[in-house]
Image (cartoon, rainbow, N blue to C red; front, side, top):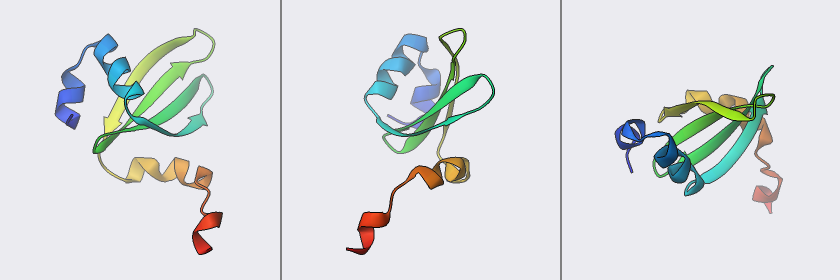
Length: 81
């Protein structure tokens, strides 16, 4: 699936596509748990409103800059062995 194809999906299809991907990390803002998934060759942030228990939006992207908030969560301690 491409980024353009993902953007064209409806809500239910987006949810299905995300669960076929890999959960990379989670971060939080005032109201949301923001879950990052890798789906094929792109990433999707899922903004889940904690109080309302709903997905508020999807933010798909292919660039690397939006990954920076998640980098501290990646454990690389085992790479030197």
